[in-house]
Amino acid sequence: METKKAIAILRTLAEQTPDGRVRRYAEEEIEQVVKKTASDGAVNDLRSQLEQLKEQNQQLRSRLESLEAKSS
Image (cartoon, rainbow, N blue to C red; front, side):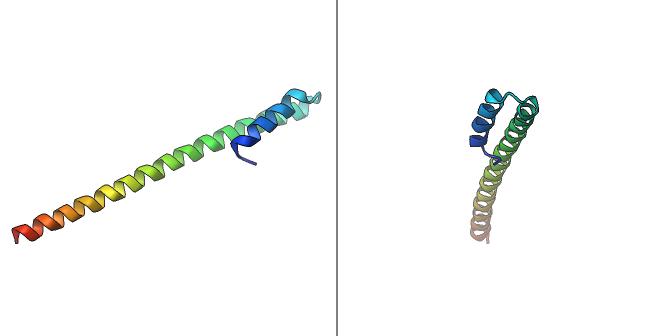
């Protein structure tokens, strides 16, 4: 359950449990989920940027081929 929905469930558990061990474990897992979702966002951003660069590269190649064809 490494999703943002898990954070709310874990917070509720941490706030309502009288057992300190369970509270500590829930808080540690919240940190893990936050790290995981943050890194997923970063990966998605990188993927998006990569796709944009691929499109720009293809456009530039097409323009170059067009210019080379005109100069021949």
